[in-house]
Image (tube, rainbow, N blue to C red; front, top):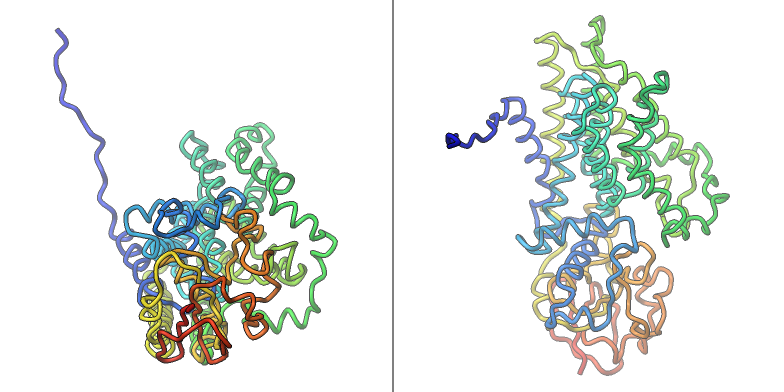
Amino acid sequence: MIPSRALKFPKLKAPSGSTLFYLAVAVFASAPAWIVRHPPLEDLPFHVSAIRVIHDFNDPTLHFADDYELNVFHTSYVGYYLAGSLLAYFVGAYKANIALMSLYLGGTPLALRELLKALKKDERLCLFAVPLGVNVMFLYGLLPFVIGFPIMFLAMAYVVRDIERPTRNTGIAVAVLGVILFYAHVLPFFLFGVAYIAFFPWTHPHKWVRAALPGVPSALLAVWWARGSDAGHAAGHGGFTEIFKSPPLDQSFSQILQWSTNVFSDQSDEKWLLLQVIAAIIAIGLSQGERDTSSALSRRFWVLPIVCIAGFVGLADHLGDVWLLAQRFPIPGLLCAIPLIRMPRDAVRGAIATGAILVVCAGSVINTCKHFIRFELEEVGDFDDAIAAIEPGKRTCGLIYDKGSSIVPNAPFLHFVSYVQAEKGGLVMFSYAGFPHWPFDYKPGHYPPPGRPARLRWEWTPEQTPFREIYPYYDYVLERGNGFRPPMGYHEIFHRDRWRVWKRD
């Protein structure tokens, strides 16, 4: 008879005080994602509606399947929407998107902390990522792009660990994170590839095969994207000869803040950026004379910010259908420069440097939340009541004449009609449906009038949309501003603040 033994479970370690502190910082850093219902992110409504379409595609009350067809793996951005659809089972599409935004804002400093620990750098440096979380690319709503940052830093951390002390777990982590990062966004994936090459043990040939194996799955995906995907073909046919047509150097220099940290129309963002630079100088200055204990691999990390600088000043603004190409490099360049900063090891000098960056973290996040709250209260107005006036599952045309804001320099209302689709289903215009990078398309023969993809800059110029393309196809017209004058066929059912809703007779 075999004696019975009590089943033993592995002991779970309680998180350290340091870990709890950084988790608290991450939660605080995520506040701009959930502080208001409608943050002023330009493409945010697109992402919420895309998650809703994918998650509830076959819901007969929403009528998505009437006009659309899913083509989820049509784009390498699919990771954002699949993750959102999974979360939507628990919290719905809108809150799923909030969770993903919070994962970016709070996860970036946490993932950078893991990289710093792997490089044997001071983990307090990750605090410098918090003020950079709300940046121009985030404000444009390029969420599949920015959510690649925390995945990228975490993947880099495991590359360092796998090269220095290879184990089965570190190898699997590199392989899995590389694939996840590829399906988040190509550009952070590219920077991960640069780091992989920089960290690779080139001077130890006997380690090459083992060090390269975890990168094979993501490398194969990169080859597929370049040679076999629609997006890769579009980029290739867009002409790699065009990719190096960069603007003059003085123009690039003058636009650095415009494409990195200029997120508000006032001067508050510049003030906190200046204070962050001062905090970095304080940290570097107080650490002079101390011995550097970082890993030898950390000496190779300078390649990352250099590549980002080269991408910003040396590339064009688009590659095929991918716009804002060069403009995407400043923010990852700033984030990748953080590990090059030094923090003083002395307790007193370290406390001074840590206190300085903590003040900047707190001030920048509070400043962002104040601006987002002002936007919600002063400019969004009664938008939710306007949506409530629209029946579920209908076709809605968004004519956004008043797109801008006095609080942020972008056009935050440009795509607000997609909130109608996220809340009520149906078909909306303007939409990215049919574009090469989008996870769903119109069914053949189901394109809205005039029966083909929308003209270039349709959403920017609603005054140029002929009435015959609106009536009688759309059941509702959502208007912001004062430019829609229907000669027939529609009557106004809602008018408050800057919003109007027209219903087809």
